[in-house]
Image 1 (cartoon, rainbow, N blue to C red):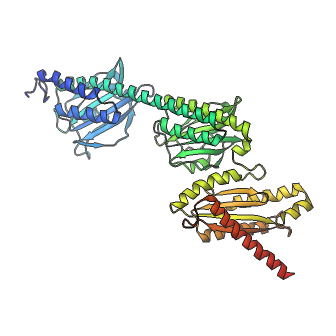
Image 2 (image 1 turned 120 degrees about the vertical axis):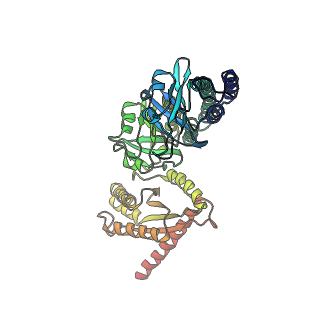
Image 3 (image 1 turned 45 degrees about the vertical axis):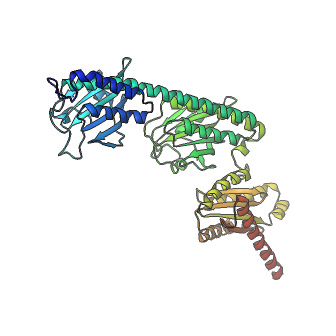
Length: 504
C-alpha cells in the first residue's frame, strides 16, 4: 500500500475504513479483558509499525494511570507501571500526540533494553468514551520519524473502537460479577436459614469474599473480645491467617473499626508501624480493607480482606465487603442465640487458652497438612494432685494454679502452635513443624518452669505429660493423634504411680 502524504501508514487512506471496520468487528466480539488487550495489540500491529506498544487505563478520581498491557518487539511482557495521569498530555487533554524524534523528552514510558537503545519516535491516542478518557494506547518505534499524521489518525480510530470494546468488556465483567455476588449471597442466606452452626456460615462468607473481591488474596473474620483484643474465628486464602490468632488492636487502624463502627482501608500491611505485630508476622505486604460486623448496633467483629496489590481497594470492593459483612453479622447474631460469644471466639474463659472446640478445628487443619508430610506432634499435660489441692485450698487457689500452668504453656510455646485447655486440669499443646527432639525440649522447659513457679512449686502439685507424633501410616484423624498422646500419658502416669509405691 502506498503511504499517504505526511504519513508512514501501511494502510492507504482508501483502505483505512476497511481496516477500522475489521478492527471493530474483532474488538467488539472480544469480551474478556485479557483477550481484548491482546486483540487491540494484534490489530494495531497489522496496520502500524509497532516496535513497542502499551495500553494504560486511567482512574481520574485518583489521577492514576496504570499500564495493563505492554509489548516490545512482539514480546508481550508483564508490567505494573503506574504514573500520574495529569503528567500525560494525552490523558490530561484527551487529544492524540505525535513525537517524530527525541521521544525521551516527551514520553512517560520508553521501551528498550538499555539507555543505548531506546525508542525514538512514537504516538499516543486517548481511549475516549462518552466524554471520559478511559486511558490511552501508544505505539513506539526505534527509528526516528516512523509515524506521520495519517498514522496518528488511524491510531485514534483504533483507540475509539478499543474504548467501546473496553467499556463493553467492563460492563460484561460487572454483570458477571453481580450475578456471582447474588448467587453467593443467596447461598449464604440459605446457610443462615438451614444451619445453627455460625462457623459454617462464616466459612461461606470467606469463600464469597475470595470469589467476588478483585485481587483478593486472603479473607478472615475476627471476633472482638474485652480490651480491644481480636481473635481470628475463620479464614481462607493463601496464606490464611491462623484460626485463633490473637491481636491487640490498641493504636492500630483496626481499633477505629471497633470504636467508630466504620470501614478502614490499609495501604501497607507489612511495614505499617501501627499495625499489630502479631498480624504483620502473617502477611507479606499489599493492601487491605477492614469492615465492621455489628450485632444489636454494637461492633462484635471485623471482616478483613487483603490483596497483594499495593493500591487501596476501590469503592466497589468495599461495597461488596460491607454487604457480606451484613450477612456475617447475622451469623454472629445467631451465634449469640445458640452459644456464648466466648465459645464462638474459641477461648477458654478461665485460662485464656483455646478451648476444646478450637483444638478440634485447629487439629483438623493441621492433620490434613500432616497427611501431606508436614511434621505434627501433640503433648498432653495433667496437673498432678490437682483435685486434692483444689479441695484443700479452695476453688480460688485452684483457679490460680490452672491460670499459672496455662501461662507457662503459652510462654514456652511458639506463636504458630496452639495450646488448649482440654478439660479440667488437662491441657494439650499442638506442635507444628517440630521434631521429636524439639517436642522433648518443649516439655523440659515446661517442667522446669513449673518447678520455678511460686504457685505450682509448693510441693503439692506436679505435672505429667504424654507425647505422640502423627504417623500417616497408622493415623488418619485428629482423634487418633490425641488418643496416642493420651495412651502415652497414662503409661507415664502408671509408671509414676508405681515409682511412688516403690518409694513407700
